[in-house]
Length: 336
Image (cartoon, rainbow, N blue to C red):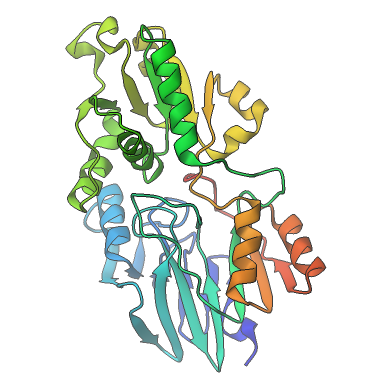
């Protein structure tokens, strides 16, 4: 059996004909396997959804109870038989509940990585290397220029700025699922014990993380109506990226605009967003992690998707690994 008979691309996304299911489809389908809860991978309207319990919970929080016709939770390492395919979910290290999906049939194993990172993260199980014949890897940061620093050192830069400018509010832009909770937990791990103020759009997901045993410390709503602008002087406020574009961010005392993202490696991106303190904290693998992971899987063939596909495919070819870009559409960088 050829790999393309197990998984191939269709307009809806990656399709498994021997199991009659899609992985992270971009439009409603009869059966979907979902790698994680970011909205570019997890969409509502499918007939049946198989995902980790955390991903199902996140989809329910975002889309409501009726987000799919039927749902089934998958534990890490648990094997399912769907048609002629065997399927298992493995930790991806991207956000809480994120998974790689291994699909086996006809003596071949293909692993679809979804989004993943190799760096340690106190808010999610770490990435697990799954040996396979074909590895389908993301390439969000698939260029050699991307080399993420240690996240703790970036948090130390934030705390140093807070100490230097105690009269200013430090507003940290972070994606609502995964990044915001990771930044908060990293602050706690670096000894920051004061209350952290959060945008209302983060409340449900922060509460959910806490319910799963991830201690985020004391969180308070970042509502200026409850007090004056100066009440937030010297405090840390975490908000969604979209909050930077509206009046909410301008309510605080002489705010220091911070943004936590792997894209902050590109100075022009930081400048375009009006970011004063860029924090290079990513929930995706950088170039070295991508290439190391490909080598670690032992895959003899690599398919590259949603990102800088050509550069990573070229690296594979130069290292004797067959590779091709998939050119899937509909996947953004919500969780960067």
